[in-house]
Image 1 (cartoon, rainbow, N blue to C red):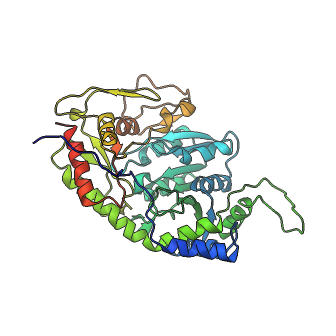
Image 2 (spheres, rainbow, N blue to C red):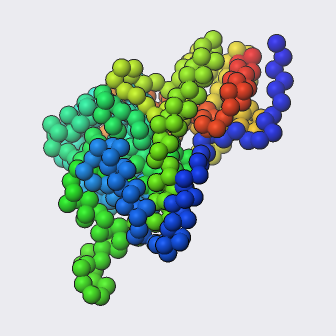
Image 3 (cartoon, rainbow, N blue to C red):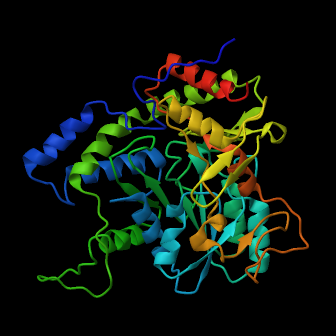
Length: 413
């Protein structure tokens, strides 16, 4: 069989917005009513829809998911110098809000069953740093972490759990929606998420009083006075009524988008069954991901040699083997968008001196240096080394996806 594959005429995206029409109706309503700022029916209705879908008592619509995480960290009471346990393999938005409040992220390694925070590593982290009172755990690529174990560990140590559910809206763990396991939780409506407002995010909590405080902070902390009275620092974080209109029109299509993403995941899984690769995992029977992004990891014995600097990568072509860099460059050459797996936070230049804890012992402890005598496994580093995110756009046709599968297969020829 030949491997000459004609590039796509129209780009196949990683994950782009999928609009339906209702969004325009609510944007137009905001325009015609002249409620274009941070007050209006769309905001109220979007918050109601989120409360109803997720099953929480309070939702605060904000400009970004990062803003929601920042206010969650602030509500948790993080003070300058406080250490905070954070997922290691995630997007930097999970971690940056800790630094906004002067906190010090302590990174906790992933486990292989879900790629999320390892409860064993979290227990070890508490043994090293028993003073920690806040944990920020992300659900990677739409798959829940072991949230009951993480919640129980936090409770046992008197720590507040913040659940970063930015990527996992609609997913469930043991029948319970993500975004409800933490005391404070965040979701995102960024342009590439399962539903979108072009931007936007939401803080979710059962603490109505805390939600009201966050809502006040998000509108510059204006006091109830006839003039602009400010007694504490505030932020310009509130969602606009226009963006809320887009989100409002997207909510009815969440399940539809999830089913499309799920079909993409399983088509990849079937298409790659004869390749030395595996898909991003989840625990069947315990969790239902939203399948936001489909990812693959190359088996160790089939991994071709590659090296990466902080900004570049080189690889060698080897018969029967491939590398994430080769696959991503080949996809790009055929006009399809992939992405590397999130580079773990402890590998990022800005956080390279932060503590890092793994379940097996290898990592950076209180000395901020690798423990030389320990040769344990670094799960996040390994997944980053061997993995990549595949085109997962829910507008991708079956024919386009079949072509993507052939492109990936060609890299192992």
